[in-house]
Length: 188
Image (cartoon, rainbow, N blue to C red; front, side, top):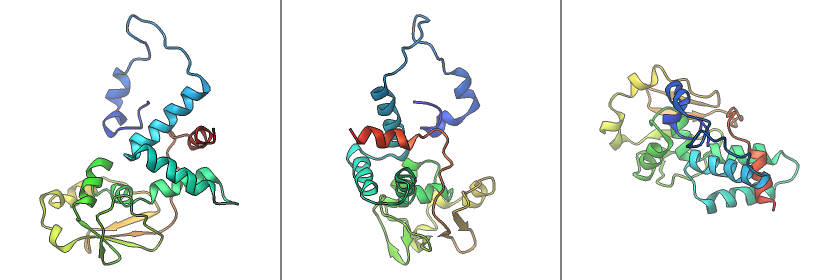
């Protein structure tokens, strides 16, 4: 599915070892239009860790909105999930890890404990690490992990107060995702 789907696939070592040929030295056939759309849909599902039903519900929601780019709205919906926001702030090693951290109740959004990874975070919301969770092992070396991390421009995290802010709407910077292809898949 390409190098961007899983975190371990985003290294130079992985891309150097991955082969473009099938066993026996054969080249793979070019996928059909349907096959290409299916692969793009699966990339989004696996990279965000969501089910088929969740993705189709997101597509239904954004296709009912008129006047705004549907692909951009779908990207905003996917990026504004709480588990993804926590991942973008650099608090977890992967989206799977942050999903588990959210479901275990380690985060507070606007002074309310949230255990739903798909909770939609809006501009101006404040995401904090829960007081009882600050001493947990997963948050021990947070300062060391965050010093080399560059968060996107639309989120910020303050180590002193242990809280993050949503500053703006997410912008599509992922070059390996083709959201328009996924929208075409669901329009069948």
